[in-house]
Length: 377
Ligand SMILES: *Cc1c(COP(=O)(O)O)cnc(C)c1O
Image (cartoon, rainbow, N blue to C red):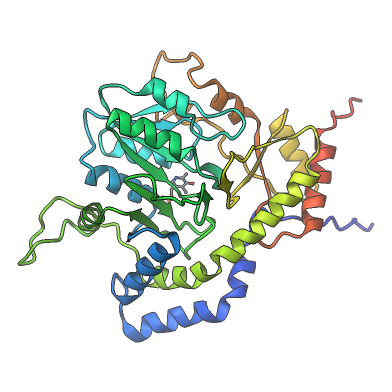
């Protein structure tokens, strides 16, 4: 019997990305061995400079990963036990983990129904005398409403931090992450728009003092003179090899983001009516880290798409305040109804720079078929 060969569509395609820059990546490895410089050094300084320049912000500090980047910023701002930090309920768990690891209390707020980004109205309602900071998450690759959040935070006298782990190169009203906040944090996890060949992260800030404080905390509190350790720090540094790889891939970031915008345009054209697209808020030039739609019977739809050769994801299946890590006993009422409803319906469709219009058409056809009610015997 001959099986029809269904064409598969991959969720992401890191091999294709790396094939484009393979010779340059090989050279990174050779250089690292040649110079025997593995932690810090010229490759890290060079990447920090080019990332800061590309983002139009004065200071970049390479760190171990995106979660540490957030925690280090919070610690450098003196935020810890006794403080509250407002975070969206619909985000990757790392946003809340970073807060909790400092000893501060994450306060979860709901997201806007169309964009699923942190809602400024919900932030306003959650501000308290204990609020020390608000973390805006630029979820799925578009910036949250930074103008509104900046006004709120200035008025309340609290710090504004951006979790830009999904938004390398994104802009809103002409401004990128780091332009309207104390600092923006990035992850270079391999699957992000700008990804290393392992873990990595960065803090971007216009505040030189904050950059120095983060750098000191991330490198065992080293600073001052005579080899002193001025504060209790940790080990969260960017490897030289990863920095070199990131410098190579940074040169492709705009091109790859532009291709993601093209893929998103095809989705906008072809997405079946039964799926609700995530709205891009006004003023955004998004970088479409993820292409998230909301569908009924999500898990069944997902299974039927997988059977048709289409890989999908779910970002995120449990809102942070309902996870085992953060739910509070006895607090079962729906406190973030939009995030809770979204968690049951969100479906991430294949999104990467190497998708063709045919891939998107195939995906949307499979989605349309999967949305048809199952035939009952
Ligand atoms: C990936 C991600 C992080 C964490 O980054 P790591 O490098 O994996 O620690 C934090 N926040 C968001 C929104 C992310 O997507």
